[in-house]
Image (cartoon, rainbow, N blue to C red; front, top):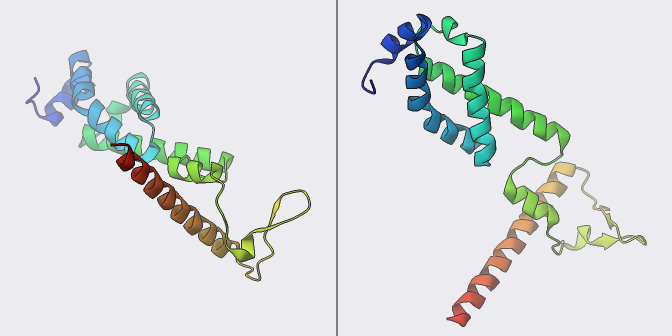
Length: 163
């Protein structure tokens, strides 16, 4: 059954053959999880999303609408579901769910002179002459990356000394 053509299996699925659905699940589940993983960064979320897509295709009988490629249809559904999920998470938070950005968010690092002014309450004040917040954010992120690289070098140096 693994060498059968998708179009033959799609016709069987439209005819009500449950084994054809199992064929598509077995063939596309892992590649779709990897596709979703590249967009979501967390494998558990990716697997849940792909499972939801397969359940939705089965329960709503969306396979009846497919004319050409079941694989293409599934990839498009997974892609669109990932985009919607990322947009939803981005609207709830000003940063994305990217672990690198989340790490930088919690790391305290020295800022260049125009940004390291602290008011009486200990809050960081942005009294830079630059008015473009995008430039401010870019510089803060660049400094964060430089600081993270410096920390990595120190960790590697420490590990080498332990040997």
